[in-house]
Length: 335
Image (cartoon, rainbow, N blue to C red):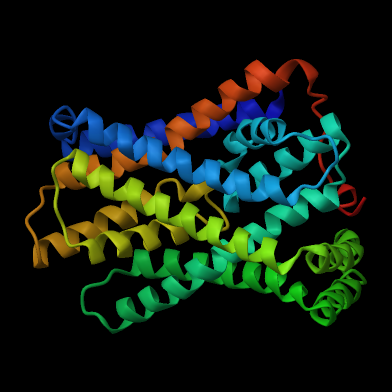
């Protein structure tokens, strides 16, 4: 079994540990056993659909002749377990490795497709996060943990949006390339990015406006399906809160899971979500700590546990025997 699968399983164990601690600390097991199995299943299914839509948008940007959509879906889903890394970069690296090893797709094309979609998704989240940050700052009902976590994730997304979408204008793409050229004089490991951003800008120029618009729509649809998944996590516990609060919590989770240190924000997401819902519950609607924790746990099952397990199974059944296990390097990404 390749190193990345072992790491994915290790991170999954960490997720289970966090959920177990939360369950014990809040007596959430008493609430979880009453969960509606149908709505819980809907939460899992809708989040998996959001990933599938994301993979579809990525797959449509890969133009390798003779490479079927079904094969790209297998590669896409077999790499999802790599998302259990800081900023989820592991999944993108695995997709690029698999396409290069199995179908000779250049790293530039596969990485560029991922960057474009993430740029669109991050743009939407950045706008929502900016609104949420402003609301939290002027509110008397906020906590430092949420602000710090949200702020760090917000900064990461702003930088990502600038790097991923500014090269839509070729002059900006070359400007970013020149920036990396200057930085590489002091930090030599940045040298490959100088050439990459020239090629990335070329990839964006070759993407039609129609395809860009379709990719934008799919990215929005993917985010919406994630939101629906969270809503069904509340429904599964028969917990009804204002939809606006569900949207705020969704943005909070989406940003916090992209903090630059913790894999998918494990631990920070759960603590900040629990704090937010507790503050809102004390002010607006009655919720016990067990109910709050059970909703968070069910959503973690939908967004982390099930997709990771499914991804590992897809990898083991379809790609394990033909995977070379190579590692991607910055220099590979420009070839």
